[in-house]
Image 1: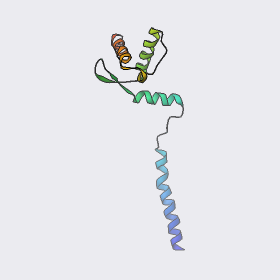
Image 2: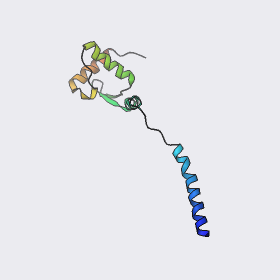
Image 3: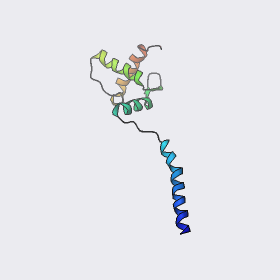
Image 4: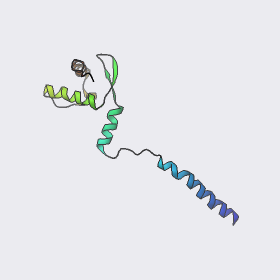
Length: 100
């Protein structure tokens, strides 16, 4: 009988230590917009004109979409463009760099 009480007490003690761990878990993004925003903050692309990596954030994405709009072309993800078209974008981008 004494063993049974010790076992039950150890189970409650273990549960008491493990419950707070769940409170510190980071929630995953719940909708597609949040996932897209998270991906954009983590994405880096290579600027072959200046031979450097750049963060692809919402600011860069807006400029990239403006590039397509000026050319009256349909949007294509930057990663799917061939190297020549990516270089065309970077050249345009540096000519139209807005100084924050």
